[in-house]
Length: 257
Length: 325
Image 1 (spheres, rainbow over the protein chains, first blue to last red):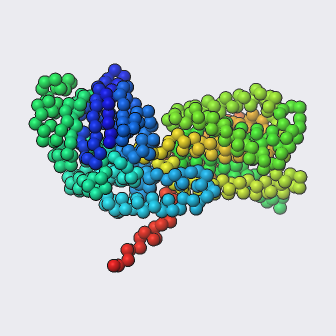
Image 2: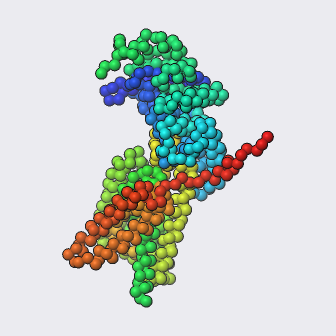
Image 3: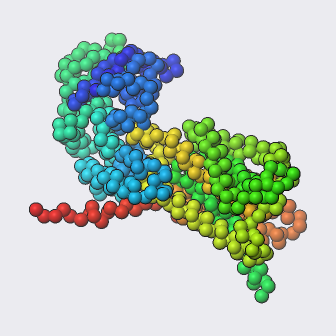
């Protein structure tokens, strides 16, 4: 579904990603792992369009989207969550989800002032979808709270909810589990697999907790120091010499402090 | 009796100016309160509106461009269009800037506009100004009753702009705009065309600022570059919106009236100062308004009427339990 071809990203003198190519298969839950500073979030930003690669191409369903802006990619069915919650903090939880939905009639400023009826049905559908998603994420009790007042874990759920409101083809989850307690995390894993199995939604997720990754992901990509180290099943990469080196030090990938 | 009617018409004049400020405040609320656009050049768009309407409605003269003698309502619409188009041009250049940089750029643009007004005397008659600007229904009324007519005229327009602003706020468009204000990156990730929303917001706000400028020109019947004092327009309008409640249309009107009333009352107070202090009076008023803003913002951080999410009308139906099977 997503294909990176020879992606390089330079931040000033730092090469954050160095000739990385990989595929994210449709209908799968793919894990993207690696030590801190490996370039995982940068890779996500390249896919979502927030960072322009210095070289290389990004393909989405076979179409070259390298030149598209983030909102254009989102409109094509690519959704993402952020590592640090990016909630709309002065909007309620319900509004956060509703704002994320696509509303072509209701976002037309002429309709809004002169033709109020034109977007009633659309708005109603968005509302129902948002309520359903909030119920699914078990956020009903904080529905009318301002999102800025939520806990870190709840904000992560709002992030996921907003991504779901887009009815996307793929969701990129950047450390959705970080800062969420174990019980909630396990529930979240169930929900992600449910979405994947029932709706055929594709996921790509960055996560540090390998047990969590092994529970969800069939296929894992391992990055270290801006390169793609290896890929395969969780068990295979776990026993890979280079992966162990990258995580625990020694050899080429030892952190230079 | 005369003292009482004097007081009454003082109140009328306060309410007329207060209405013009309410328009500016509503316009700024669309830009800043809803859209997060830091427009620090309000006075520039105010001036464009004032000069546009003045030129469109005055009789022919050799001193400046003009002689169109259009009806006042056409002048107001012209003011909105020209100010809106200028806003669009500015937005094309500046809308990608982050808030503080947009503030700097808009101050600069307002200053450029002011210099154009002072120097292009074929257009504006320079520092001598434009006189003989008509008032609405000026041919039927004169003197004090005319002030009452004008009061009604101004507040009718405030009502229209308030209704438009409320519709903008209470809509998916407004919701997406507030989302962009709160977090641009995640709004873009949710498929929102940030630039388009911001440009629309900036243009609408600037058009309303232009209307406010036009009304002030018709009120004073005379327009010169001194009417484009950033202190009296940009600064005061920001104070009003902060005090009244950014993100709340009613708060914008309350803030405009409240701060303008205080500003006017402090004038009475500073007029009674001994002559050696009189020259300092304007600074003292500034200081008082600044202190007041400090107090209000310490006491009510989001203003007197804080932002409130619009109601959703489906609530009742959705709350109803599902029918039993």
